Length: 133
Length: 125
Image (cartoon, rainbow over all chains, first blue to last red; front, side, top):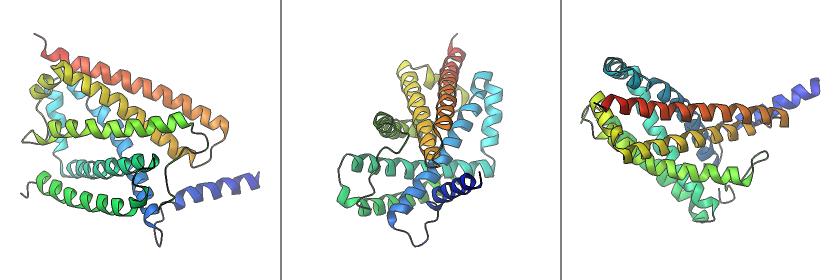
């Protein structure tokens, strides 16, 4: 019983250790970011589906939802969803390509390009969403 | 990183792994249109009620949003299942996860299509 518990703890610790990216290769960074954004987006999808039920209720309920979305905290949460979506989508395309043996040798520069693109677009979206430009 | 190529993991069939990849690529393609129309075209960042009703009442749009819903739900559930598989669950636990996710998927997709129809109904008459 104790052995099983220890084994389970070791497995869970091993799975969680993927998220400890200190001193790790770019592949671990790509994986950890992919996982974190995936879990965030899955959570968002479920909330998104539930919240959109206001559309079925009618115009007033939907307007109340729009007012809530404009609250700073929720607005910032929406921004994080966009950033996560950009990274997860692009990194997913990289994974799909390399899974079929395409551009495997160029994984590191592609990953670096994805990070750079995500940062630049995220900055632009931030300026747009928060009406700075 | 050169050897870090995605492949099926224990408890994940090749078909399921392939389906996760394909749905992911398709979600990215449709998400572009979905985000641009729903959030970038509108000056306030979100469509008004009337704009949503008009948008969804277009049968091609409804088809696109419906397809997006199915792909996104399937990809999300297969992705979360893949994360759970890393915890090396027992065969019994995998079975419970599969049944639960199947029910969640069917309910989410059914609810999504009901929602599409309910929004379209606001534009009738």
